[in-house]
Length: 169
Image (cartoon, rainbow, N blue to C red; front, side, top):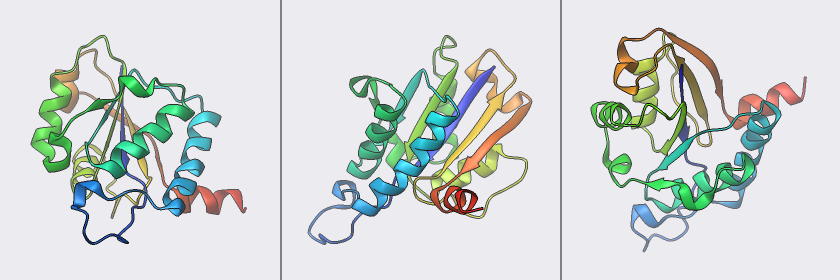
């Protein structure tokens, strides 16, 4: 069994137009909303064997917040510039090259690619993966190379607005 977590970066700032897109930092609001997500991950005993993040500041900051919450060593986050520019084929290829010893992997990146990738894998499609949102899918396989050909089960699709609503019920 393999588990994939597709995580979109937290809400980022547009306050500094002089910064190139990759350098945009997170908003405080984005950090707080990611806290709602990390509470869910902690409450559900979620852990990962590997976190791969885009090099963009907002994605890497999000990856570090999640890593800290789930006790994943920040210095073991793999920074992969290809995630920033990737498409479905690129992400599929990156996953297929992973060591089969890894059981669970989280990719932290950007839309529209992550929504497209999630929809490529999900039976029931989503409109849009919001900031700080995570899609979790299990694959009934022992090999990352066989993900696309294996049976899939959606574990959860979470985002701050959804979790906030469920808390208020």
